[in-house]
Length: 343
Ligand code: NAD
Ligand code: MG
Image (tube, rainbow, N blue to C red; front, side):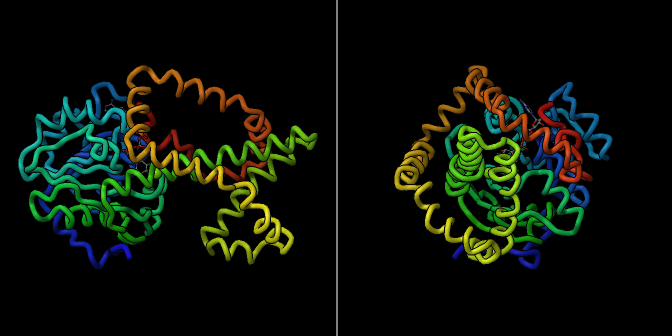
C-alpha cells in the first residue's frame, strides 16, 4: 500500500527561513503562491518581463520579480510554467541561479522523467503535484480543505527533500486531504495515461460518439446533449462519492442491467488493446518527443485539432442549453479571470 501523509506528519518548520519562488502564475501558479502566502511562507512569483500576470499577482499582494531575479532570491524554486516551456526556462533562468542545497520542485514529472531537465547533484529535486486543477487548489484551501497531492523525491541532496516536499504540500493545503508518496516515473506515466485514455481523451470521445450516434439516428440534439453530456456529471458525482457500486445502487435496475451487460461491449478488448499501446507510447518517451516537437514547431496540429473540436455540433447545442441554465456556472469565477491565464 502507498504511504499516505496528513497534517500531523508534516513539519512546517522545514520551510522556516526558506525563500520560495513560484515560476508562472497560471492555473497552478496562482494557487500555490496565494496558499503559501496565506500559510506564512516567504514566497515570490517569478514572471517574464511584460507578462500580463504581473499586475494580477501584485494586486493579490504577492511579491513579483523577473524569472532570473526570483530564482536568484529563492532557495526553493517551484516550476509552474507550461511543461513545454520548462526546459528553456531552466537553461536561461534557473540553472545559472542554482546553488548546492537549493531545492527544485515540479508539479508534474514530465521534464525530469523524459530528461529534458537534468539538475546538478547538489540540488534537491522533488515533486508536489496536486491532483486537481489550480482553481480547486485555491478554493478548497480558502474553504479550509485541500486537494490531495502526490509527492516524490528524485534527488535527495540534503537529506531533507522529502520532509520539505511534505511541508510544501501541507502549506498549499494538500495534507488536509492526503499526500501520497510516488516517484517521478509513476506520477508522470500514470498522469499522461489518465488524461489521454480516461479523463480527457477517453471521456470526450465517448460523449461525442454517443451524441453523434443519437443525432445521426434522428433524435433531437437537445435530448442527446442532456443524455450524453449533462447527465454525466450526476453519474460521476455518484461514483466520486460512493464508488462504482454505490452509483449502481442509486440508478434504476434497468440502468444498472444496461450498464453491466452493455458497458463491456463498448469498452471491449479492442479498446483495451489500444489503451496498452498508448501506455507503451508514454513509457517509451514517444509521446513526450512528439508533443515537444509539436510545441516547438508552432503547434499547428494542436491548434487545428482544437479548432475542429470547437466546431463540433455538440458545442453549439451545449452553449444554447447552458445559456438557459445560468445556475450551472453561477457564483463561479471564470477560470480565465482568476489566474494569469496564458500570459
Ligand atoms: P498554465 O498554462 O495554466 O500556466 C502557466 C503559466 O506560466 C502562465 O500563466 C504564465 O504565467 C507562465 N508562462 C507561460 N509561458 C511561459 C514562459 N515561456 N516563460 C515563463 N513563464 C511562462 O499551466 P498549469 O496548468 O498551471 O501547469 C503548470 C504545471 O503544473 C505543469 O507542470 C503542469 O503539468 C502542472 N499541473 C497542472 C495541473 C492543472 O490541473 N492545471 C495539475 C497538476 C499539475
Ligand atoms: Mg493530470
